[in-house]
Length: 297
Image 1 (cartoon, rainbow, N blue to C red):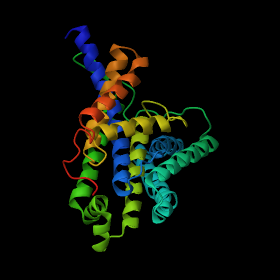
Image 2: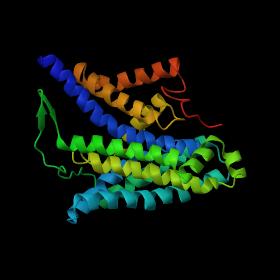
Image 3: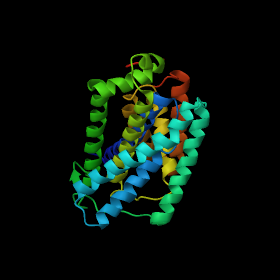
Image 4: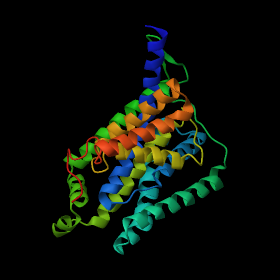
């Protein structure tokens, strides 16, 4: 295997790993959007909080599986429920325009950022890799053991969310609200309850991403907006009305960022991503896979 091909394959491997995190972030954004028509700009803060809380749990000496589960449950059921109940529900009940609520979520992200500064400070934190730091090498390629965890956890979380939406009664109720809120209300489905379900799931996905990626990168208080923007772009690329689009959009963002940074220069990676976004919006404004399972009506 030539050095050039090895280098490109290494960039692809890195892109897939980073893209996996964007898949989870994008999926969280899409789930809330389908239920509320609101873009949750606090989604990235769930990721950073996942890293910080997992770090704290690790400092307490908790085993990795216990620390991971507690992190996901706490952020999902406590923070996710709070965001749904107090951050989104009051605005939606008053029929405030979705654009205004989206701005409110941006304010919420700033509040969460201040809380993180107060609790953990401004210095980045990192936890040891779950399976050690020894690099796995094959066919000239190198992969960190934690990257394998990231890929595996992303795959499991993505499949579980899709199974929940398509196979469970609660998931079908959520889909009914996301596709036609008025008709769902006539069927006796409480749209407010589905909103809470959406924010809990999105918060859990953010926590999973944050806890999984922290051993590779760092948890830093001001990374949230970056995560949100990349996740939002991935959601738009894949299709905001289709959860399956998160997979395509997230991996595409990861690959474009990694390949452009490695082949052209890190300063050009954001430009390449934006150009790709504009191209998709011009050629297929509904996203790469929009319309496969229907959208909001």
